[in-house]
Length: 456
Image (cartoon, rainbow, N blue to C red):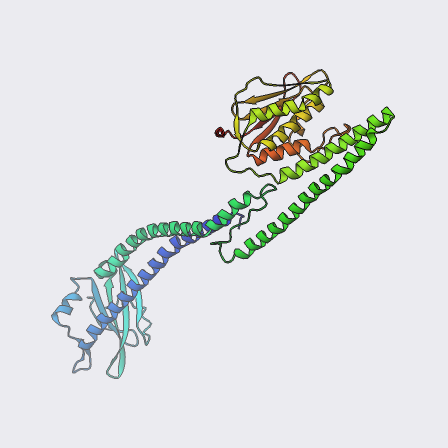
């Protein structure tokens, strides 16, 4: 059987096949049953006709057989009526009596068995249906044949075959259609807990490791699988928390030795090794700080109703990073609009994300150029530089942790943009990178707009 996408589709397909099979088989079975019943009734009627004639068989004084029917039966089997007939056969097949004028039987092939036999034979435009019933006549056995024209069978039998079956066939189709609809509703209701579990499973990720699949109203056959998955999610969450705590604890523990090491290096009198060592310590300190930010971004959750002024956050970032840009011989600027832009989110986390974008732009823009920060009223912030830009084939990779396009460049960790992407996802936002004009890269964060925070 071809693979169908889901259990629901498989069940629906199987039910549809079953309904089609029933729609074909049931009318055929009904037709067979009705035809069999009609034939049984007809055979019984023929035996009853033979039983009506048999009592009027007599033996004449000369030993010949006679049949003295009452007026009603005589008219029924008359030649002028032509719908019914009879014949009496001896053991050797000789016709002793008969209703036909030539004294012949309609069914000479009578095997003359010890039980009733039934025959069919075309006669002109009609089809004759007959029976041969054995009877004891004196010391011998005779076979009484009776027949009738099937074109003039009993009205009830005609109605059964001609009227009942077509009407039943038309009733069967709507009933099967209703049955299919009920089956679909039952399948949908039965699999509804699985659909809810699927939707819940789609929400599970690094940012939402506490989500579990629902066990209430789950089918008994599927419940062990759901419990096993929830237990596996518990183990994964514990491992994820342990890894995050380890990174954060290790980074915090490294801060103090680095501060002590910086103080000792600053006491060195020789300028050249001191500057080189301080640069290395600065790079190590930056890595430690970013590891702490990674751990914080992994644990970041946005509380309902939490809002932040995106323009104020961006302005604070520019003021914070301005000394770094000036020291590197570069400029930094922000759009002049002063109106607040409220978005859903945590101000400290957004500061961290925008600061990483600005810091990354300062690193990649050449000396004498500027880093531009623009905030839009729709809840977006764009950071542009004048560097070499980001190749299109790398734009989906730069947000991965520890990924660096140019590994020959010293000081990079590949964590800054990963932190930005993580913070933006936690806010339900979107980040994109494009080419800046006339050169460079433009990183844009788009967040959900929010109602301004009430004034305290």
